[in-house]
Amino acid sequence: MVNFTYQNPTKIAFGKEKEKEIGAYIAEDNIKKVLLAYGSDRIKRDGLFDTVVASLEENGIEYVELGGIVSNPVLSKVYEAVDLAKAHHAEAILSVGGGSVLDSAKAIAAGALYDGDVWDFFIGKSVIEKALPVYDIITLAASGSEMNTFAVVTNEETKQKYSIASPHLYPRVSVINPELQKSVSEEYLVYSAADVIAHSIEGYFTASSHPDIIAAYVEANITTVINTTETLLADRDDYDARGEFAWAATQALNGTTYLGLEGYSFPNHMIEHTLSALFNVPHGAGLSVVMPAWMKWYVSQNEGQFQRFSQKVFGLSDAMEGIEALESWFNKVGTPTRLSQFSIKESDLDAIVENAYGNAEAFGLAETYTKAVLREILEKAL
Image (tube, rainbow, N blue to C red; front, top):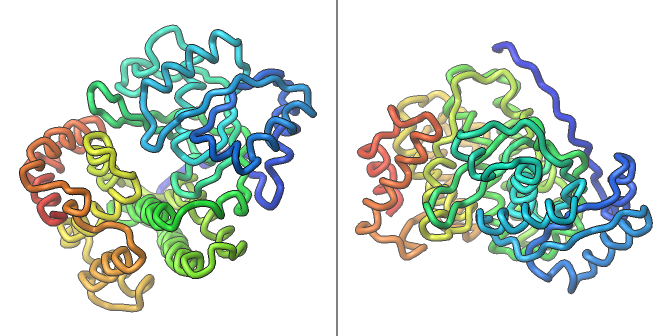
């Protein structure tokens, strides 16, 4: 097990009606004005917006409202929000929504205290040295952004879906109330499951050094996602299943499943970011297409770990059987496994490969993921 230092400063407030306490959590930090960011008006129709506003007002906190953040969040909206935060002297960002809203909130938090273009942080032109505090109420379990330093945004003009990471972007407090996630559609539930599994397997398969205790943790996380997804497809009101699913999503990318690992990378996310950037594919759906294809290409490079995955997760023995079992499960629950399900054709591969190679350069993986390799992987997903 290699050396590591682990610290996660995010406070998690988990459980029923915890969203009613958000104002008190923010007031503890002596904050008087927030930029309240959200996605669709659904939070107004279902009463969550009113609950949040009431909590803020009870604690003497003003808010400036910014709605309309979309899935696969875009840079133009971040620019709009940064200008709004600066103009109204917001002291913090409050995100109410899923990972797309929270990722945008993190970018806004960094941009609000920066004199230059916030995109500078995404392309490595500048380093995040400070950011406004971020708080969130998470309404979709998938990205794990509620307990990590990462954020991903798409630049619509350049078609680049890039990420930032900084200790300054850890949320101060994240509220996870599984009841708020009951309205998530079956479609996005299974997309979310694929996203959580992808977060779990990136290090599991690619690390050059991987402690058994962390491997076992990853396997338990994936098994939990599979079991609770099936339970929720049968009964969307099962609170315990929804709670376990939500916590698995948080654990998959809050650092605990990567402790003691060495030499790992995120090739599935690297490739999928291209699909989202070029075709606006839902992130989790894109991952369920990329993962089996990448696994079939990569399996010979770590066959022992794939055999372990097959045995521990699916009760099988052969490495390829485990890959096929995961792909079959994706098909069973209804998340895509082929590019053709997005109407993406072989004639689109040149553009996809070109964009994905740019991602490979940004991820520092261009030596391994050449254009020829990327095409080979994508052809397995046609």
